[in-house]
Image 1 (cartoon, rainbow, N blue to C red):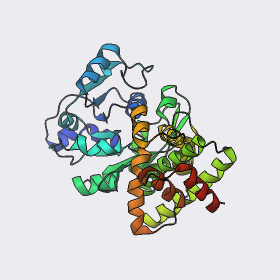
Image 2: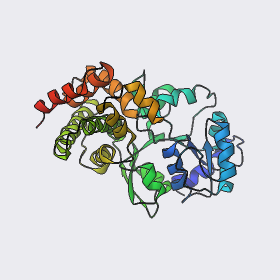
Image 3: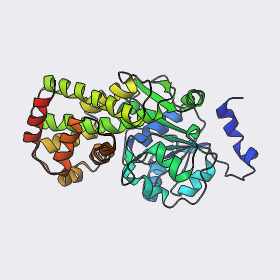
Image 4: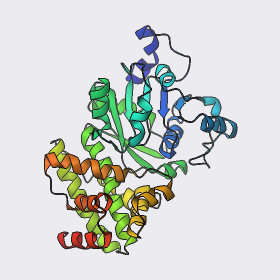
Length: 348
């Protein structure tokens, strides 16, 4: 009996009476949560799904599609148990896939009183918890006493929009326990999703956070009319910054040329689906941060990540000129045209 089969017996083993729902829950109502729900439903009879807004749930049930995100994607809602109760979803589920924007994670969890003991936490959040400046795995470990081997993260180049279209995509499941990562990968393996595993949970998370910063940088340069040649040099410098920071934060043998690192950076920096690139492009064209955020109506994780990583680097003192440049533009309101020109003189 493998790990996933053992989870099916959790209610019996723990002695806790649980609702007769499904064992895997998706937490979040955005595009990435919707894409993950589609993926998991390829491998599970049904899922539990938490969304904060009751009106979104009601319309979803009526129309068989998320009314706000990936609206062309239809679901068999008879296979989904929806709830807007965070405690209900935790009670009903054994595996919790968190796919909320990182700035809102604490807002969702502050209503949680039910224990997360014996739950498997999978973070699909490619962001960092503001204020605490913690990656998601550290946050759950320190704030909720979840052992590292019960926490996994999803990384890799995998845009929600392409998942909806069933275009071939790649996911890396990171966990300190590689055997558990392999077992959890069964939830996400489909004909159009190829999975791999890693024990570099910290490196994957930090890389997933930082690639959003560098996608903002790529967008700013695009908005300033820099060309592909410059973008290539920018991203070459960016992956080196990711590598230096990851090695300082968590020294171990890793290859940042792999898709969970470099691949994720490239797709986020170049893709038309990248909200971080779009946000950066607007900044490069002269929009203020506030105006860009209002017009997008979506969260650009790179904006928050820039401040968090900049503050964390006060401890590590890693050379990160691209990060420092984006921080000056976003938080010190320095002129993008001047700062990017100064950056260009430092790159090679």
